[in-house]
Length: 201
Image (cartoon, rainbow, N blue to C red; front, side, top):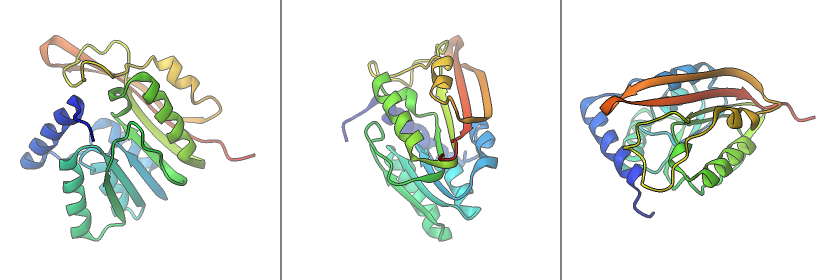
């Protein structure tokens, strides 16, 4: 795997969170929690807090992330609790999910790819969502001014309307835009969409 500024940024953050016990669900994970069921794909799982909750509720979970520290942490916890959870380190810019999932989660990931890769991976995640299944997506959007976690090249701030267009025909379960203060007087703006894929005709 090639070195990546964003991966390094989060590897350091995850190591600090593990050391300090900061393992609570973030607001986007909290919004997704009620929709977890069946076979779950957590694409960009980070420390795996949501993946662990899903597995503890009985879901079979595939959790993927590019952070070695996060995946090692998650594997250790899953093994200790004998959970139905498989944690895999992977470069998610090109990863193709295998099979269909009842729930697909992608929180805080796609904006770290160049836009062409981000849209391609969104299409793959939609294809991996089983008919009648749910896809939970969270991305940074235009208006975000905190850029310290991005590589100099290769990130994507989404236009909300363009994201919603990709979910035409899906049942909207949650749609929100949230703005958070960030260091240096900057801001992060997030779009969170949770939608159900139509049943096959």
